[in-house]
Length: 364
Image (cartoon, rainbow, N blue to C red; front, side):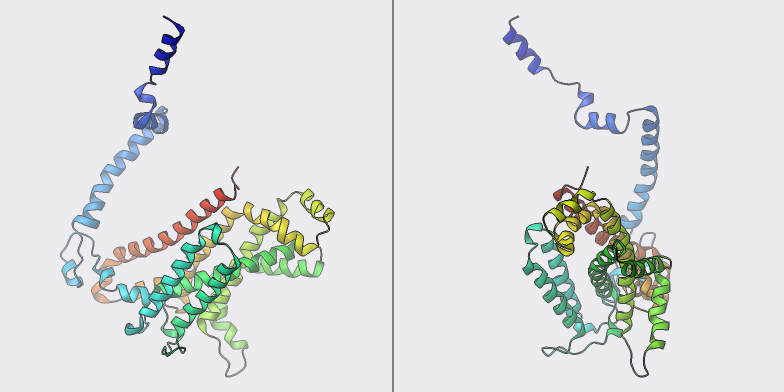
């Protein structure tokens, strides 16, 4: 056999079928030892036992009739509790004939979020676009301009209120948290002491206490005849609470920056503001993308706590539907729908953070 024939024979040889493709993946990931093999078999058995009944309950035997009476004698899920009350769950007590306004506001918000996903669009015009978009959203919800009738904030509710509290809250909390982190890392003792007291005080109490203070105690300190909108008070509490946690995360990123970076900035003659804006903060914020997003996701879910101060967010409108006697027995379906909405929002945030982390090369 010549050398050429031997090379051709080697090239035609293929790896064993059990080491490539689906079988190779299963052998490497699911059956690569006795423990993993047993664990795989147990998990598959549990899935076989639970998935078919779940599909039968949720899909095959489910009911979609507009009335709950049709579900009483059924064996499957009653998704009518969602379909028959979808407009109230989404929009709350917002006037029925004006619900196109919060719907349009949510469309604008989603469009801005998707457009902002591309880092090539991160220019000054995008910042102005966000300011204009948020102003338009507020104008649509409130009214009073361009012939739109005024809708009091007491009638706002459902998903628009949840997005309002979360988006405005997270947008304002992040820069405030950065300023608090810089203040706590400052060499000015008075500024550092104030930031330390604020951060430790806020982090030492639950968000519920701040919401109660903003709703019950804060109005007692206002002059007679002066009132502050309940939504604004809840928004302020969420911003102040989230900013304290963001501050500690950002401070950890600042501590991870080598001292040589500061010395290099000094050698270039940069002042404090230029050093932080051009050198330190870009690196620190890239380092803390994962924990920052975790804080923001937690803050988004914590907006549901405004239910305890009688704000009709998405959770409150769903609970109001379940208080109706004809829908009382179908809370599982309503809360599954609610969980899916929160999951989609949180998954979008988490997925975007992973994408941003890859683009900025923050991984190891």
